[in-house]
Image 1 (tube, rainbow, N blue to C red):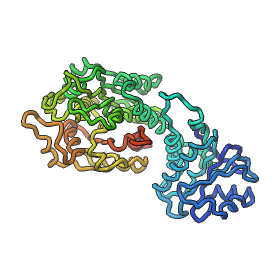
Image 2: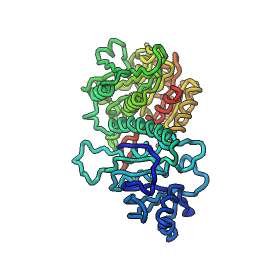
Image 3: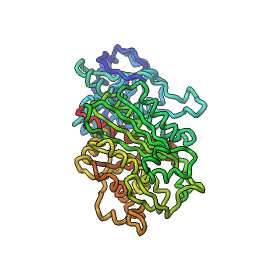
Image 4: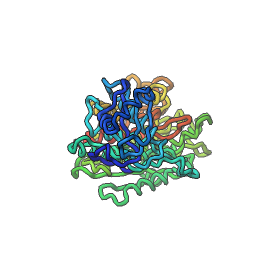
Length: 497
């Protein structure tokens, strides 16, 4: 899909469709007024008949409008004319993208990024338009017999500029939006692949492909023997029941000055989570292929960083394996020694994500990081606490937390801070080891983060629990690609862009 920016004469523009907005009072946007004048009041006549209320989500497709070179005009409801806010703007973009998905147009001219929105410039509005159109037109049908009629055919989208001076900012927004959308699509694809395809070995292969031909990006893959040499006993305890070999994948992006401390992203990569001996209920267990969405988001973020050529150093670390029951699998009550030397009593083998992350977080210290952010589908408790709307955010450095919260608002990929109080640490006490791997039902998201915090005392650290936001269930089941937009916005801000 190709996006572009250009100042155009809408009346004379040859295209399959022009998209313009209509407010609830049947008032057209500025672009709509231009088309109405050319058509000698045809659009306003249609509106006066009451065929379109102007409410968000409503639309009307017109063919062969008099005086226009365009084949169609799509009128899109934008709600009240005044007091446009972020939520309504994004809802308009989303609903419009869904309409475009069902249309058989190969090219369109889009104008809704020109809606007036306090606090945001054209860059941001164009970026969101590009991202949301890509998001709603995404399909995952690689493993199906493809029906050409069911696939969107939209290939070219021109974001119209009213003045020549607007072309550059719109194009900047498009560049960022497309790069982020590419990263999101990669994360979605990896999450949507079944676990018999997307294995730890497959993730390592995709990481190498990502770095191929990119001078600033390199990849290292550590095998099981390397993990044993590093004494990653906690990580290795999770993979004991699987026949798939574990991997520790490290990607280094060097876009900043040599010697500048990197931002390290650590992504949980459990390519299938049965729960191990503490086996999960069978209902919806197929969705446990999404337990590697933290790893997928790291790969998606590095892909976008590379495309945007951000002047920053970033390291991505992905511990990846399966968690399956077997005669050799870890058992409740087992005690293992982590890379840090701290011992862990495994009370529940289904709390395995923290067991691979803790060793990866210790390993992250080798890069003398400026900041470490881990991303994980870690706890069902986070879904109960925050639902599917906000990512859980916990950390040991408030300025870092604040930066991530702000990035989430800007990226429309929001997070919500939860406490990391010392009182919660007591729930991890063990009679036999330095700590237990679970802290009971109460505050499950927080105690999981408390566990990870014991391995991050030497640097600034934040934890993103994406259990509720990384994928959708039900009839629209599929990966969302979150929190790639949040991560990229944080890195853009960090790089001073």
